[in-house]
Length: 41
Image (cartoon, rainbow, N blue to C red; front, top):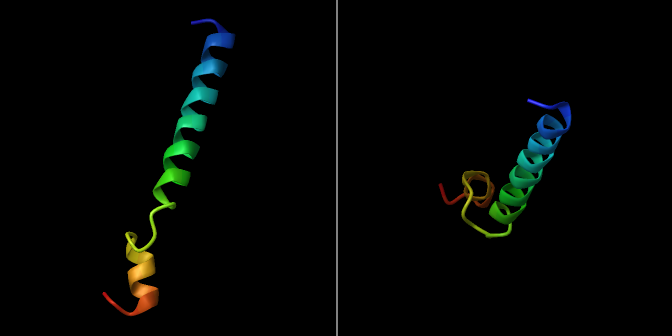
């Protein structure tokens, strides 16, 4: 596999991870950490 293709795959995988992570934190009140901080576990 060419080196440029490997770099392209790494960058696209990182960008996808960041997109999913940032979209996941955009939903308020759904994470376990927020429930623990609010005292509603």
